[in-house]
Image (cartoon, rainbow over all chains, first blue to last red; front, top):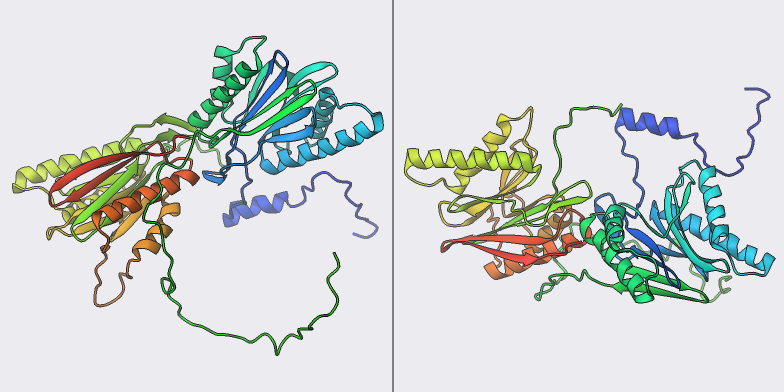
Length: 274
Length: 221
């Protein structure tokens, strides 16, 4: 069309291929590649001296376990951590981005980051993307104003709670919290309750599994207890083992092409630039 | 538009495996019953002993599987009454195929593996699709973990192509204990990566001495 100029995209998503994808899926029956979701059970609770966050470690791609020991508790600031459920790439990207923004903010203000700052940055980003960034988060930390725990949903809404669960195993974990949570738990009681809640998700939800990660945040100190529990060792290992000797795979045809006459290999030469 | 309200099936998950040996047959299946992301029970048998030398393991929709097993067990009893002997494994294999094809236009959502001893006492395994296409092989895996297990069995039990002439023996030269060890290991591996497989493994071994059952624990997450 004469006189029509394509404006450069200013970020956000390009939905230009959506109609073509839809017609491909309908007419040709082409399967759209799936996203790596984390299935997941993530939890957080507030105790006497701070917050405890917990997460399982299974990442799934449909019915298959893609990663048996992934890390779902992400760093936001030295005093703020965030558990992520939903599409793995989205939770990684959004927490990394807000973490960087918080550090720049710390340099600008000269103060420790506040949990509500992280919360506002996350919710405004997710709302802007209208739920297309599929990240469901449990954000927790301790700052000057005290301990805070929030949940953030993919469309950008948030809740402030004393205890929270998210992910496909959230119902299993919440049943534990609703039975056993009380105000003013000690550090040991808090860690134990979080571990119990995550274990409920690990054993009763097929989207969650493997190990339990815990993170304890108090005023001035954060402890990241990676693989705090390992309740799922492999049950059987063949004592006989496997051998893959040469000749087990039939070689039908061998052709060796010398590379030297085709490519000039310069001996020595300049070292590659870093 | 994918808005049909008439999908009557449900996949309850699970994996079944069978391996035939020179004078034995190992049939194994996990015992987890699931729907969606939830576990219904950790202790459900997918294996049915149809005759003294014939064992069927099925995964898929348990409603259809229960009905199928009941149907076949009833037909086997009728056969006993009419012929004064129990059904042989190859005979049951044909019966299963016919039963499945009978419902060609409203199939049993069942992925079956039939194992046992043939009339000569040699191990045999028959593998099926949902509508009754079957083949006698040396080993097979069906169910949600089958894609994880079959390549390992192909590598370890290397069956000769059924198209080769003269017809080669498909049964594995492995001993009974070695075959059971392999089955336990492949299930432990499948459990690591398939969310629908786990909890417990039920192993049924058929040989000339009779039928015996064994259980081992699998990951419960």
